[in-house]
Length: 118
Image 1: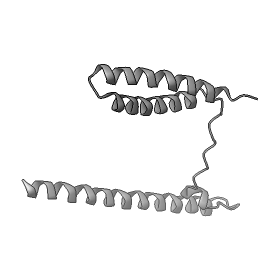
Image 2 (image 1 turned 60 degrees about the vertical axis):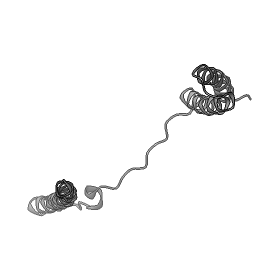
Image 3 (image 1 turned 180 degrees about the vertical axis):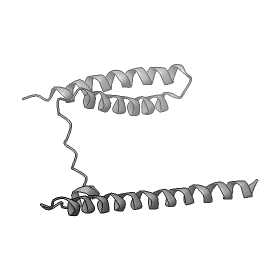
């Protein structure tokens, strides 16, 4: 069985190589540099073309474990279940506040050092 995405990518890569080589040569670059840059452009273009036309489906991302998945809600009813959900929500909110504080301190330090240089 022949891999059509590879052969399509190869033919497209050769066309890109010719295009880039002629473009650099007409722009006044030395011929050896035009060949080299054309080969790099052809390799990149062929690789992108083969990837774009590939028949492989997207890979399934691994599920990210969130805070709510770590908290196991057991078979509780009424007030206990509400308290457990509220506690999980406040933990999540505290983490968000801590992350914001860290980011704000990073940006604040960056701005103060820039203003002191001026």
